[in-house]
Image 1: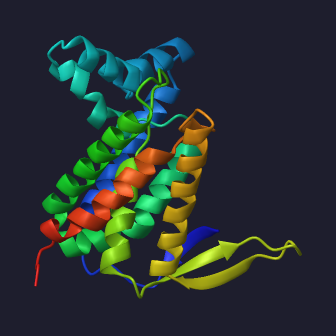
Image 2: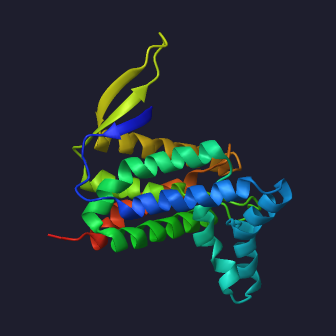
Length: 227
């Protein structure tokens, strides 16, 4: 099921949401014009590689800033055009309303914090992986978790596959859509953990799970009006 739009208009221009989309897009298209070796080198330097962090923890070597900044920089890198478009679409769909409730600066801090927590979840559940994790989906999952709490009665207009090849658009309550999405992430993360891999098909399931949980639990601390 692919979400098309929701039925809640934003009251204020979603400045930070738009800025994040622009920054992510500019970085991607700038890197995509570089050679493969340059692109790959950038991903390995600024993507989050759990095995590097695990090695430092085991060896007891103090962390430097260069060891930790991939928790932030990895959020602004994407592996391909589809990866970028799908993430930016979901950010646009849910981000404007959450930004409305939080305000611009609080929303940005919340977004980055959700992304960092998502990275930590991925590290904990996949500590020996040498595959760089990139993408904004962990931070966006935090936005989805906040939306789940703040706008449960919203309707998500969703494209549902049809056997007759005719597009079917259904208005699904946000609380139902997002809960089902979370269950699919939890199921996939659990199943792939059992069979020996938590990053399957390029998807870091536990980063999504961690981001969503952080959004559910932490959104209240970033609202304009907490009453």
